Image (tube, rainbow, N blue to C red):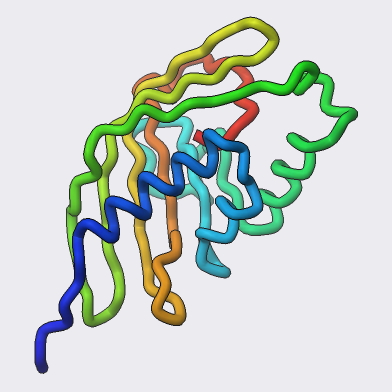
Length: 162
């Protein structure tokens, strides 16, 4: 079997673009980055291994992401009056595993996430784990797991996806 070429820089650009879309509140474009079965997981413990058997702050499939994003855009969302903003400060994503033949990649990205809402700022450190797959030649998120440094502590109500 011959080797399949891939460009690690493409994976890094994908991760950076994903964060930029969230920061710019381009939520539909962000949600389009997910594979059809793609999940967003924010575990409630740093050692969590199973989102179906352990507590999570979020475990969103496409339907739940769309509901969450629609609420963010709603003029009736009290928490978004005035509208909040967020910013992701990322370290360089690290490629953990790559299987170009199968089109599967796993990356680790330490970050600082800051959210401004109602004149209050919240900053959360953590690590994002992206499990990417190729779907019709394009990279898509199969799983995004966000491990907050203090996920098992009391957290403020987060409005945006981290």
